[in-house]
Amino acid sequence: MIREAQVVENKVSNGRYLCRACYGKLVDEKTREMKEFLDKAPNASEGLAIDGPSGGLRLETSELVGEKAVRDEIWLCLMQEEVSKIGVWGMGGVGKTTIMKHIHNDLLKEQRFESVIWVTISKGFSVIKLQDDIASALNLKEDLAKEGNKVRREAILSEMLKRAGKHALILDDVWDKVSLEEVGIPEPSGRNGCKLVLTTRSEHVCKYMGCKVIKVKPLSEEQALILFLNKVGPNIVQNPTIMPTLKLVVNECAGPPLTIVVVAGTMKGEDDPRIWKNALKELKERIAKVEEVEAEVIERLKFSFDHLKDGKVKSCFLYCALYPEDFEINKDELIECWIDERSIDEMDTRQEMEDKGLAILKKLEDNCLLENVSSAKVKMHDAVRDMALSITSINPRYMVQAGLELEELPEKEQWSPDIEKVSLMLNSILEIPTDVLPTKCQLLTTLLLQQNPIKKIPYSFFTNMPCLSVLNLSATTIKSLPNSISELKNLTTLLLRGCTGLRDLPCLSMLQELKKLDLCWTSIEEVPEGMDMLIKLRYIDLEVGTLKEIPAGLFVEAGHHAAKAVKKQHMLWRHACSR
Image 1 (tube, one colour):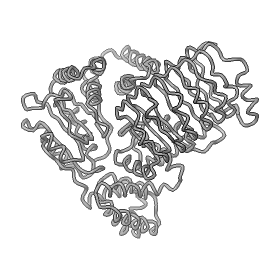
Image 2: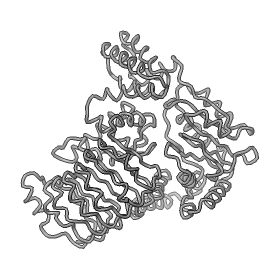
Image 3: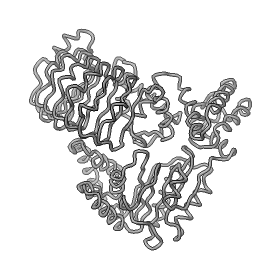
Image 4: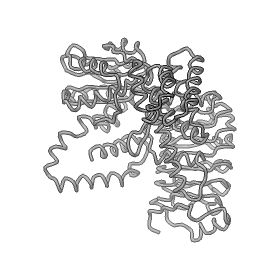
């Protein structure tokens, strides 16, 4: 229950620009559940206080294979007073994060530290985000969020960490050097008993930060074979005609657990020796094309992507790269996005489409291209995401700068004429100035700007996006949309969920291709003009507390215009306010 409550709390605290009322119902439910539980078991409250989120939450982990020696070395350093900073480095996919998750959980169990703090940094590093993430892990983010002064933020965070007592701070996926002083992290020492552990692909980062350097090496041939056989399935293990080729395939995977698991997932259940020989040939050809170790990892992962075969499944996988690095993606939301993107074919009912989405999700998980975080969430390993972005950057087709704390739109030169999808979600973009607007985006189909504090959109912004199909402005601070939205003749999905300042929309009658309109938690008082002309509308969310009325016969009129093209069961109606 604490873990579920922590998830809700993180949603509220991390949604900087989304009205907290959006999660109000969820907060109320969890609060009620907690109260009912404690009423029935009053003695439980003492245990809750001891094991609560302040000490750290147990992390979900996968099985460790072959990393026992490294794990023991890291643990020994953590127990030694003379070692205060530890740098765990190795190539992408070699298992650094998995090892540290196990150690994190062991530290919680052993209670050697008063707090065990886990923060993932990733490529989009910023001092402010790191400060916020550490404060959030300590359940003290609100104390830091209201402070804008750089020097005071450092002092406040430093005081927070000192109050946390003897703690272990784990910084996962560090790409560049981090100034502890600039962030506000007290220097770990034998005197204060605190430890800093970082995982990185760069030995230089470890040395620069004065860490005890521990390298995570690829698995040995024997360890790699054991892991591969565990993942590929018993029917393959028992097939003697395949085993010689299988061992050669494992050797081509070269040891990183990630590539072994992903390739094994791709070949799972494949009992034709000729397919195995072809797989070996493909892997050899891919590795021969590149020289760098990191490039070799990406090529092995591409092997699994190419073996997805189905183009729709491939596009669903690539879509996941539009989210920020290490982002935990809600499964239901992801399937909704696949439907919006038409990566799932239209069917008679929405339920059938959602079921198809679940089947695709399972396939990607079975192939180890997505990691199952929980029953509700998945995520992409950063090396798998690198592979996906390398595929989409060939033309280039995608521009992904999500979750990087950007305060401005990318420069005009970055908006390639061939670009198809743009993701700028979860940034700090305040405005869209006309002087950096893209001149031509003739092929752009998807624009994701959700969770940015954007206040206003210029009229000319949409005039050069004739093919735009999906527009997500959810949880922005816009108060209105420009009339040029009507020029988006190919727009099928318009998402404005959580735009609490939005009071009115321009006439929508020209958006003849619109299939989905989400106005949940906006502040509109009237149904947008021209709704009765949206003949292809299939989904509408009108959970709006400020909405005064819905004109009588509105959807009957829409149905009249659409004739047989619009089926009643496709219309999803939610209306929370009293009529």
